[in-house]
Amino acid sequence: MVEGRDDTAAVKRAAEALIIETHGFGIKKETWNIIKKAYENQGIIILTDPDFSGEEIRRKLTERFPDAKQAFLARRDAIKKDDIGIENAKPEAIVEALSKAHCTVHSGDGMFTEEDIYEAGLTGRQDSRQRRAEVGRLLGIGGGNAKALLSKLNSFSITREEFDETIRTIDNKGH
View 1: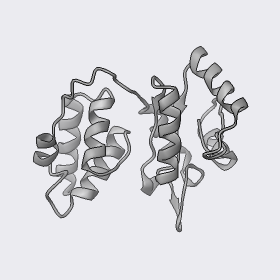
View 2: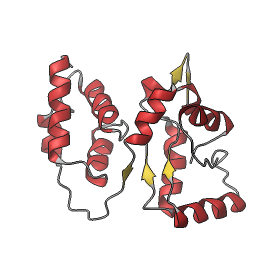
View 3: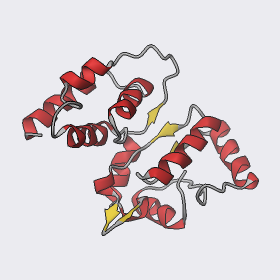
């Protein structure tokens, strides 16, 4: 699932896949039906732009298709001048995002807490924003504020070991 034809072209340069375009917010009934069929038959991966509009489209799709896989590109991998979008990403970045696609976990037991986020330096530090962005990129779950990151950690099958290793990697890089 991508937003438009330029995104489709970028994904086709990176991978062989059946691609469905939402054409932005105004998803037509016919498109919803195509998405539903793909979702029920082989499943779908949602890959939208790492901006407000892309997140809103992702939210709409996820409401209807809660078990869809989620793939995220970091903003830094999808920006060209002031334009943010999948169409700006290099094929390697798209392949990496797709390879890290996660399913949503519906258990709601919340392995990660606000304290974990704070202790990892993802809040309360001058560089917390950059650290959160790097965690989201490395884990393939996208960035966001502390609350959004906490939700993603608990919504996708991120293990404590993956999280801890990611924090160690960032600390070793000097973030």
